[in-house]
Image (tube, rainbow, N blue to C red; front, side, top):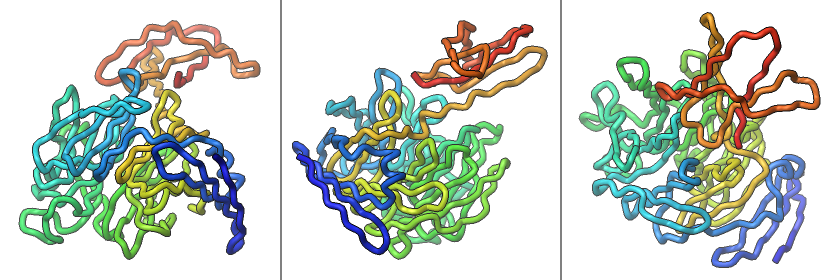
Length: 395
């Protein structure tokens, strides 16, 4: 059943699209910018309830290998769950008591990186082959209060927040702990595996975070109830931050998990909806209003399925725009021979080539041999007298 109500309020056009769904409450689209909203969501799209678990759900991340599945955190029961669409749910990882995974994300090599927010966690870890391996347990010898969410940059650095929830540790400062609730950068590839605080003021409860598609901006959600906003920072080539202006506000509840799509829009959780903000100026494009949305991510073969988790359900809806995981950087180097490289395994991606860039564009699968080494796919390209163009393509 589809019903629609359009109302003009305060100079904006709002449209509520109500979809009757089995085994779920009705979904509602609130449209503030109809032109932009139409580019990203079909208002006839069906919202699916993939799982109902009467607990607090967090940290979804799509794993493309093995046919594709969603990992999310069942915090009350202290475990990671695995959802094989549409509705097959099993346990993925049973960590020690009070670990309490929160935000998760895959790195470039499709390894699961997670923030452990509970009193037995207090670290950033990597989960591979069913084993939870600690990556960051302290910064300058001091413990964290409750690591919450992670973002992985294409250079391998891991950025994470610590708003102090979930662990039961008192407010800072505490002996042996950091002096405040900070944002950190961990570099596992610089030889010393250093951890550095990158934001120590200007945020009260730093929570969700994500990079823009070009990684020139870092968005951070401040989930303090008095602020309930997203701030934006400029990222330099050396990974230093400047700025911190208010990008957008959440009008119901607080922002928790946030992510960018391939065009740079910011999709945020909120107390009443998933909020969608324009990349250029942070104006509200619209909302997917469905109970409480705590976190979200893109999945599916083309990364055009939006998964939302909260309390007590996991839901999904097809969208028109892909999420950031659909982007992979193709790098080139020349040292006597041209080498092309991109992260391995890059499930679903293939190298394509063409002889010209004028229409019609006849891209085809490249026959060049791909060698996987040190977490990279590498292709050697022999010199020829003819032009050749390459691209990395999803599916």
